[in-house]
Image 1: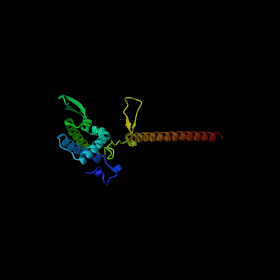
Image 2 (image 1 turned 180 degrees about the vertical axis):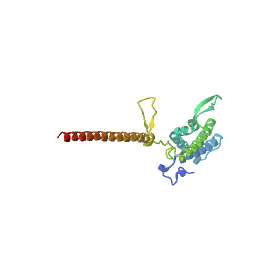
Image 3 (image 1 turned 60 degrees about the horizontal axis):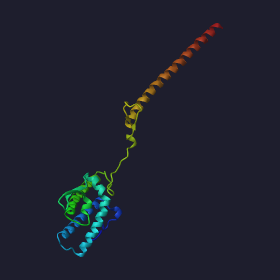
Image 4 (image 1 turned 45 degrees about the vertical axis):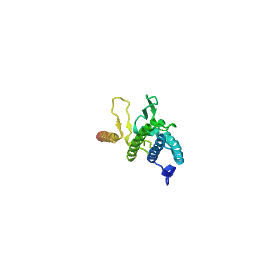
Length: 212
């Protein structure tokens, strides 16, 4: 495969993160294959040597870009325990060990671990994208803001139950009902007072008429 062949017909800004991770995985496999050939003592051809150098640079660049996302998706420690040359075991960063300059058996082991991580990450990312949980271009989580319908009305009283906006129409209805009752009472009270004044005026009118 020629350099950048997988991107033919696709503008860089339109590349999805899934495509980039898949390319990362395939390039890592090709790099491992060529390095193992050299480790077994096989002589690589000129174009293979150039491809190894190119792939290592590309893989390091992509590692820097996507390492944190892979760790976030897999929720796995990206540290491996591998034997050293003296036979003792030690902890290594999986990615740096896989892509170190002096490729050896620990690098081969690290690449296998990284390939597993990539496979898990691709599967999880694909699922999250299909569920609209992550952006298909960046892989970042999609955050949704609370709508006005879901806001909470807090109270200064700690033991008082918090109310949501869904509860407000009922409260408003209750308040409106009581307001109508008081309006009805006030109206009838005023009418009663006016009626009393009218009756008193009538009595005084009769009295004045008799006195004349």
